[in-house]
Length: 134
Image (cartoon, rainbow, N blue to C red; front, side):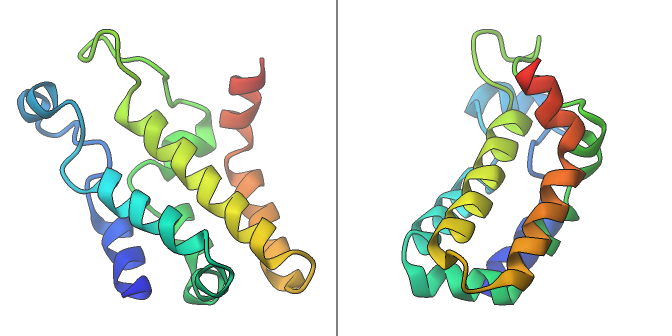
């Protein structure tokens, strides 16, 4: 189930900007919030966090529909198409950071390999993180 959810996450339209009318109506993408909620639930359990680490969460979170925008620091908090609400990309990006953080916290210092992967993910999102902190 974990591997399938990560594959689905990598392939799905995370922000639903391809269908703005549906996005305006629903106020959220169809699948991404539910997938990310599942990920957060699983990584809150240490054994689930370990499975996420071994199944390639960093790879899935580094290669998806918003990876390029995150690596370029282009994810906006708000969109003109959704006045008064956070953008779906920003919600997904923050959730991805939260999941990776939860995995690192759950694994503690036991898995140095995952720590290195997580550092790579933080470097990938570096411009977005700098933008958020500025």
